[in-house]
Length: 194
Image: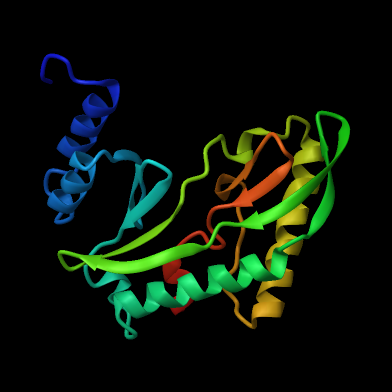
């Protein structure tokens, strides 16, 4: 660590050491030097926040897709846009801490798909906050919420004529305006290529 490093810089350096042998290392390092902050390192992508945007950097030849990585991810972008349109304006009642709360659903679509030094990347709007995984305290509330996510996933699969939508609590954030913001409609983009 260098004197004067910010907490973000220290965190990014720590993660970059873990990614030392990852071929995406230089791309991620470049994004961090542009002001990015690594917010997740998943099995699928490294997620970097830069201001109000989220960039996901996928491996080259992602999932060895016969469609090609960019085409596969572009198909996911289209699906997120269609899901956003389909759910626009939808409201449901959820029970949170014993109170009935009307929530509005919003899918955050992928805005851009591109390659950076040969690595597929997506860009979308950053959504602050904690996932709804930790919102529901009672088992009854959690069960009802999971049932609602299954219902929404099933409805989107039917309306979009697909079979990969699977909304999980970790990919949903509830803001102060009672808007449930869905940041991913599938556990992995590779589900689209099944």
